[in-house]
Amino acid sequence: MIQQTEIVLPRLKRGYHLITSYILKELPVMPEKGLLHILVKHTSAGITLNENADPDVRSDFESFMNKLIPENDPVYIHTIEGNDDMPAHLKSSIIGSEITIPITNHHLNLGIWQGIYFCEFRNFAAGRRLVLTIYS
Image (cartoon, rainbow, N blue to C red):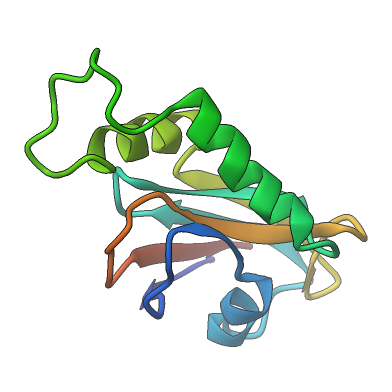
């Protein structure tokens, strides 16, 4: 069986946001076994799994990615949508726009220190949409 829902995240500032609890609130009762697939429907945001305890990790992600892919780099041709747009597209492709998490015993089967990060790469984005699909 497949269950699917589309959600809109609250407006989040640029950065890496732990959204595990938000996702769990939006899901129906999960099957005993299955998979949760999450797709970000945007080309300037991403999603990944990482450290869920120390918020410094999320700050370090932001700092490192900004160093790796800076704004205002003269190599960018696509600049009409703002200084943060082309870097956001590159960051989205590097981080990725989808993840799949196993479901075991009606719960997400994440590691003890793993959480779901929503990665907002634009300065002024709103209405970010995610598709949540449960396969059982």
